[in-house]
Image (cartoon, rainbow, N blue to C red; front, side, top):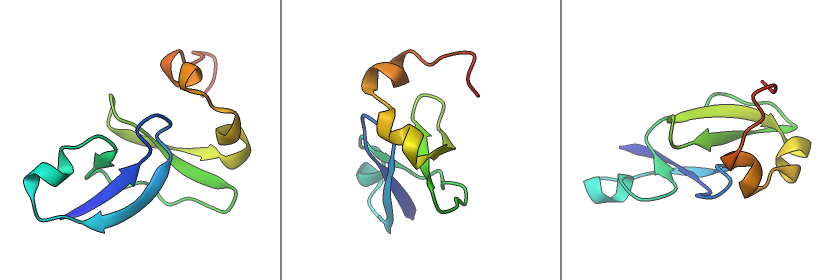
Length: 77
């Protein structure tokens, strides 16, 4: 089964791999949901509560803190 790794605190895409053991896909920072295609200057960011990826500008990602992810601005999007 193909899995996708993301940073547990920031959600930033870390890579992909294959796992055959069920326990391996139930850990923190791992999902079976594939990220969408992205372009240069952007990166996929995973939101584990909603189990969705979004594409974010690398410059915006550099400024993203744990506090920002916990309290998203409802005006953005």
